[in-house]
Amino acid sequence: MSNENFSNTPSKEHIEFLNRKQTLEYVLDKGYSLARYGDGEMKLVFPRILDRLRGIYFQKWTRDLRTKLAKNLLEPKPNLLVCVDHEFTHLDEYHVVIDYERSSKTYEKYSSEHKQDDVGVLTRRKERALWLKYLNNVQKETCINLYGEATCFMLCFFYVEYLNGRLGEIMDLYRRMLARKRVLFVCPKKPLMGQSFEYLCSAGVIKSPKSVDFLFVPERHCFENYPHILDRIHSFKELDAVFVQAGPTAAVLVADLAADNGFIAYDVGSWNVSLEKAYRTQGICF
Image (cartoon, rainbow, N blue to C red; front, side):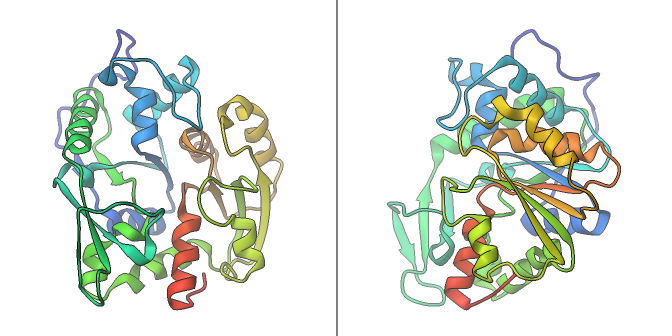
């Protein structure tokens, strides 16, 4: 990082990392909000690791965005679980359940677990090395002792659960986030991947909430509208959960909402794809 100091005295205690399922269970059981830091967020927080200042294709880099993201990544906040892609540092090969993949990829090989070629294998040595650098920077400066797993909303990465026939347990956790709740989706009308949350609700894929409202945001460069989006969210009354799909801006929004009593918010990214694929593959509704 640069000479900017985003944290207080770094914690010297052991840092614990939850797996994907534990992450979902943790926020549901404790009533916590969830902010996710994937590749895009880490590029914005640690641009020097890639030796250049740049954004990502759907969000421009700004110093203000970087500062807010870094503070939330490194400084503990009440009622908020911060998540990073620590699972991607464990192995060079990643198993992807094809039925739930976010987008088509070229795989090095396939394995047949429950049917022919149902799992694709990706080799990600360079990506793993990059994530080890990211997490090394986090561990040097963080005051947070517990992190979740940022890919918890991506069904395609629940390979172990799929292998053991327990993927339904993950879908049940997804449903618990929605069932009998008054929810607000902060999301684009046309997301970068998959069908919109608005479509999933109208098509009956999402049908367990008590009520559903929508606040539509741009699919790119959302942070430019951050103050307006935050004000609009506060204009909605009597909400049980807010689901935010807004790129890196979502991690900032969720942290700010978690600081407000009564708000539970989830930074869900491309969760719409997982829900849509579960419905198409198994007819499961949420």
